[in-house]
Amino acid sequence: MTTLTYCKGLPTVAAELNPTGYTEFECFLTAFSGVFYRATIATVNHLLSLNNTKFNKSAWNTYLQQTYGISKRHANGAIALSRGSVESASECRTRHIKQLGARLASATSWLKKAQKKLHLAQKFYADCHWQNSRTGCNFPASSDIKTRKTNWYRVKFTIHNKKRYIYKLTQNLGHLRSAPLRVKVRRSEVFIVGSKDESCGNQICQWDGNTLKFRVPYCLEEKFGKYVTSEIGNFERNLSRLPEA
Image 1 (cartoon, rainbow, N blue to C red):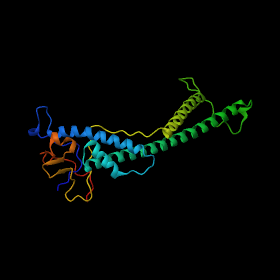
Image 2: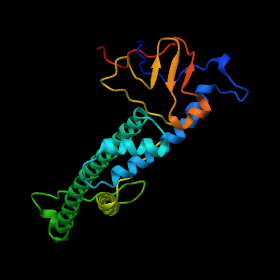
Image 3: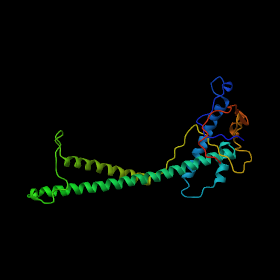
């Protein structure tokens, strides 16, 4: 069995084009993607509603088969895609919170140092005999010739903006920690997975180097038959994306 590695797109066979400008395989994928989208949405919503309860994959697989008229292999693809999407969204949320927390800590640290530096400078110049100081000022006042604004003004303005930035980060962190997790499910997408006990590759979708053969789900057999094939041939593709076995 030939292995099909990563490819951005499959070639369109001119001889298979129908009057609308699409092949039967493309029409099938369009129809199947709608069914697959609804099954994925239902699975994602179910996974999000578990609240740390163990997921019963077998029972949910049966539910998808009966509800959407798909086979066990098709349902496995929807479940695998949904679980991956939910886990990815959860991990991204955790990393985002961690990243915002690091930004908040950095901004808070800078604000404390800037306020302390400005306070010490103001205290230094408040002394009537500051000209006779032996240590000098940690942040001496100076003025820009073009803008005629002092370096103190720039620091005060930066402190003002930094406080607004800290407030925004605090609000975002509070929202992310309490907001329910949301997962984006793409339309026009079909995800197919194989099984370890299959003796001849993936039983749903197979490619022998010339013909691509796809098993049609039960709900679409009346329109497309049991299998949909396309003579895509041996086309150019990127063979270096997958490691050697």
